Length: 200
Image (cartoon, rainbow, N blue to C red; front, side, top):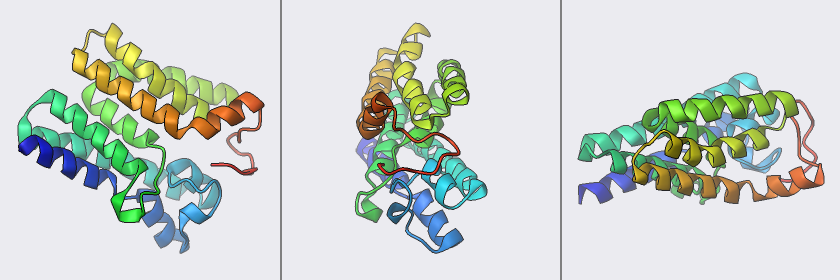
């Protein structure tokens, strides 16, 4: 019973759309109606500005960490903690409070990974950041981080449940970035500092 309560609570925490709330307070807009239409830090950066985007990024990481902490508080089970993190990412992507129109879960994934598999995530995170610096594609770095995470977790000899949940996060990330992947292949994906040309 407590496991179910933890998972539902984590989903509800994830459903608090930081991007929507910050953009509404900061600029009086629905972030989902501007730029790429994505309710996340990257679109907030393009539409509202760097400080608003930084706040969104921090808040999205924080809510995922709190969701993991909720799992610990209610069950003291590490697998449930990780599963709560996954539930928070699902909530971020499909928030019940905002017509199930959310972001792509990258910052939330960082928060979960930092809490549960810090060193494996750090290794993959460095590679992802370097890819963003070199290519200026945020989406590519996000995909590299998520897809590389289960392999890094596995190589670090973390519990099998951690590997499977990480793999689930990777699949979720790829699914949410499917349009980005198509544009990356076509060479039309937006780079950092480039005016959006359409797409989400």
